[in-house]
Image 1 (cartoon, rainbow, N blue to C red):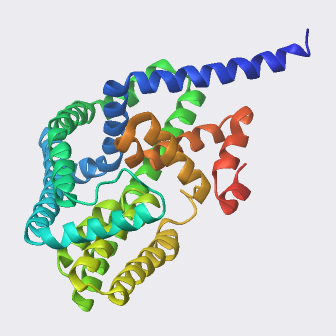
Image 2: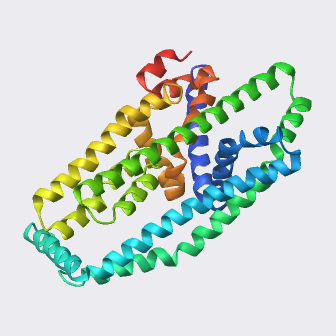
Image 3: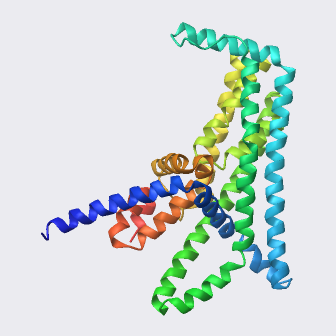
Length: 343
């Protein structure tokens, strides 16, 4: 019977994980905004103590929320600007896009991909854009819910510490607070470094487009700035739209390849050299772990899950490091250098 206990415990652990994952998927409308709000609160919390030095506590809360509001407006403005510029370009180059779409579908048909009409490519793009806009209302509802949770959650941070002091022993309280502080610190580090490298990526992309004469340079810079917040996958996606546009603008394979390799070189240099140098090893997940995290959280919560996949996975790694039975999970997900430093 004693031999069956470890097997039973492992089976119970697997069942528990499956139930938790199923619960996260089923409760998307609540758990996703809550997780996103926690990440945002952890990222912007240092603004509050900084403002406390010059303002009363209640006013500093309002100041922190105002800073977050300005950042949010900036992101929404960037998305709106990019979308408006792309729609205008589609309208001005309707014939070229239709010709490109027809050429691509003809090429696909030659390789056996039937059932793709060679005409009305522009109409298909417009229909896709209308579908995206139709879902914009749902996106704004979730953003509003997340904003409400952030506004209500900020004042609860010091209150939660006081509650923990009364509910736990000194040792347990210290360990729990240290773990929470470590997670919050790494979330802030991740968000800060990602924001910095996103700005660098956006500026470099815009300058490269200007250098080679690619139209909509500011749009490609803004697009790569936004996509850089999705690790690895966003870097790859950011290369495709300007390359396709280059085919239409230049009508030249050589120039299109120059555009492609230029954007690819920028993404590789920033994501593989600059980003790790700035981020350091304290938040080092292995590349495979990042891809798996993006796939998993994207499957659980869609695009929103992909956006917060890395900080969520890093938080899980930190938690797993504190328990001997799950320490192997932290070693498995960490990069080789970090895994070697693990306890």
